[in-house]
Amino acid sequence: MKTILYLQSPNVTNCSRLKITGAQQRLLPAGFNLRRVTVERCSLAELKSLLEFWDAQGLIVDCRGHRPPISGSGLPDIPVVYLDMARKFESPQRLSITYDIRATCHLAAQELLTLECAAYGYAGYGPGVPWSAERRRIFKKALRLNGHEPRTFDLDPSGVRPSTFYSRLSAWLQNLPKPCGVLAADDAYALHVHSAAQNLGLRIPTDVAILGVDDESSSLATPGISSIRLDFQEAGRLAAELLLEKLAHPGSSPTSRHFGPVQVLRRGSTRKLRQTRGDFTDILERIRKEATAGVSAAEVASWLPGSRRLAEIRFREATGHSILEEIAAARIDRAKVLLVSTDSPIGEIADRCGYRTANAFRDAFKSVTGMAPREWRTRPTR
Image (cartoon, rainbow, N blue to C red; front, side, top):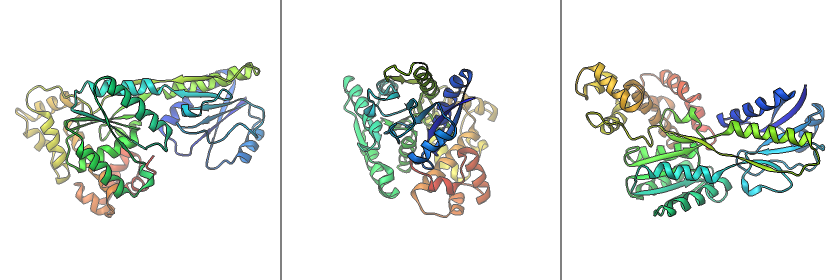
């Protein structure tokens, strides 16, 4: 079987997996095998050797929204497709797949505008990250078109101490008129905004509604952050399609194609609760405050009128999950905040979040995030 090499970052995310799945779905029926290599472990000379070793017919380079990590110069004469490349680096000489940033930002603006907030904001990495700066520009333009002047926060968390970053982000959030709707540059940044809002005691989404981009579901489901899902599987398929076309017609001119957003995945950070009887917003806020003190599902049920079974039914109807799941999520959310904003030992954080033992905390944390608490604390910020 003929081989296509796929160059990617070693930090494999759900987005990365979807791109690879899309590429494989197109390449395998055409008789091509997709073999992955990582950027850090592969210099240009090593990549050239790998291409020759596998007798690769082509190369897909996953740029992850950034500048291409390599250029085609110095490589064997094979087609190279740059996947998920920032539009800033598009060129008539490159085969490239970029995402429709305008459609994404317009969808984000539409989603937040339906909440009818007093103010809107954008939080991102700043001018040093091209795709973040471009999202900021288009989102601001869309809000201005609808009569709002969004406020922005630009700071790359990898460039400053965590305490400095959270201090500045918290000050920005505190000064936004409430209720406010915030678009974060991506899901990782949305988690930062969520943590800062919780530390300030702000109610989500009553005071601050938060929307991310990419839908890295494994990290968003517990804190309940809404996100825009981009069609990364289609992006991978388009990259493979473009490469196959170039192999079939070597003399054709390079071209670009684009992929866009699929939908908004609505979770707690932007949800409007379906009010039946009672104020579930206040109930959720009370759970958030008392979860780490050991509140039980039975106690929460007692805050609602009627039997426990009826309380559980009404709670699930309003939130989409059980009381126990809400309590567990609140504990994990608090643990995430403490892990990144303090130097407290893991055992102390376990105790402060309502776990009887450090081992119980580690097991619960890993089952939700896929990481041990110490790994979460030291993970890259993006």
